[in-house]
Image (cartoon, rainbow, N blue to C red; front, top):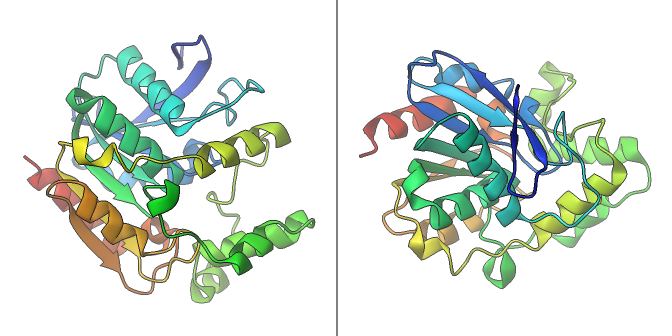
Amino acid sequence: MTYAKAPDGIRIEWQSEGDAARPPLLLLAGQSNNHHWWDGVRTDFHAIRRTVTLDWRGTGASDKPDEPYSTGQFADDAVAVLDHLGIERADVYGTSMGGRVAQHLAARHPDRVRALVLGCTSPGGPHAAERGPDIRRALAQPDPAAVQRALADLMYTPAFTAAHPGPYQTLGDPAMPAYARRRHLTASNRHDAWELLPRIAAPTLVVHGGDDRFNPVANAPLLAERIPGARMEIIPGARHAYFEEFRELASPLVRDFLEAAA
């Protein structure tokens, strides 16, 4: 069996790679994406960690109920996966919406998170720095191909896309039902962890691409200042998918942080 049952009975598909004897690192993907979001970089961590991923409800092989989703509920799904695997504590690395989920996980379940990495993410709510109206218009185009091109440009630099023509694993789960995409978008848009952030006790690293317009880089200092003792690292020139395009910088940065975390 490769799925865990969430508190409401929904089946959440999980994946585990690397040496099972190593400490676990839970990797949380972005909105409307499944575990393949991490395909390009998860092996970067296997020298020090076993990696665990999951397919969000609505994506991949997980159940896809047509009902409201929330980032808090996604955090409960992640806890269900940890429980199913018998993992008492894990390092957690969440990017984009996965970083929003990780905020809930670390604040509401502090005993389950040893160290926390929040990548290209936001506190949400009225305190967050919002993307510009031009970005929202580009992503609301009726032509799916145009939206995919706009997403790729927000994720990667032109130099990267020219050298790596795709397909890209960060542009959404292509098999995801339309209703589930809407549910994911609403869950991410309604995220507001501002009051929860001071409760995060795990050592925390905030990482962001310096040229991220999809989730503006101004959110990084908001998180770092709100979470006690958090450290912030900005990767110059990187866009939203900094962890993939700039993996030679980002992965060692995260590995070193996890190794040094108390």
